Image (cartoon, rainbow, N blue to C red):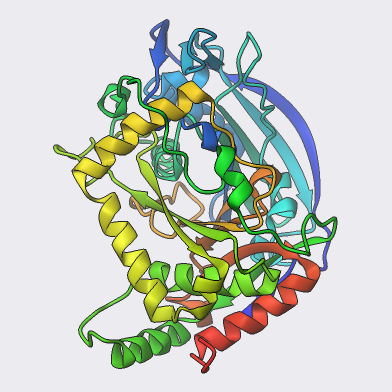
Length: 461
């Protein structure tokens, strides 16, 4: 297990121009409603992605011109993304006003070159976010917000990055990846996307009833039950990228299978990391033992619905599942005990009845305007974005991207762990994972010690 902080070389970015790229053809003028999951009051954030392309000496075309034209063509199919997201005053639900206004498109130049920066591999999110356009979040604005913005950043080595910023209410990570793949398809000359986008938000929309909302741990009035840390709040937060090799993960899995109660039981990397990081983080933060700590795992449900969601569906299709323990119970539980809880929670998320209950409960939370508590020390959110971008080739003249990063904006940093694929530039990490974690500086030192103990299943685990 290796740890990486931001590269010692400074990333300098100068934004040269910003324009609105409109659909290349006339698009419908209408107002679209969103699903219950899109309106999740606990997910009113933006998320971002950066795709890193190295120079191709055989290609002398301008990637900015290609991508600008491809974006204009793609917005004919994804026309809602060229409108404005507004909040309806009557029930506080989001709507997309499709007016063809366009997508903010930024062209930037950066230095030094990508090889010197290790293709953004070592940059933590707050630095890499310079490669992403800004989107103001003002959901109460009458004119609404741009749901999508894009930035192409060119480097002296002739490599470049594509950065997107998207409001979570409109797309989840799968939807963003689908959009970017379609963009590169059109940039390399296809006449239309291989998978046409569909709206279909009504499939995941439910009506409100008169029951009170079941508020998950860490939100609403229940926030007062969350464990707190003596390290928080902190003005000295650090973000690190922790690399875990495939061999270390396999060794841990083999040891767990060999020592657990059911020898044939298998665990995914996501499940193991969720269990281990929850326990390691709790110990590192010295959470008070007699209050609760909550693990939120994010589960995709596209394939669970009957019939499954269309391949071109790009709205939110994830369910949050929560596991609650007292901190003392968490510390006294073995990794295997916690793994069983994580697997059970995932199974629950795949139950159609549970999904239906969650959709209805989401409507209750929207009505009650449930918000996360200010104190989130005891809440950990685990998200895995390793597999959502694998839709085929993204080579539109510069080969496949050598690195891809999904980034977390500052407001959602503190209690989220993101699992990423390693860069293709690092063959030693093939099959391994990168984990992005933010903690107070002193707690980060302890966290890495705890993770090392977990990876080697020392007695305390």
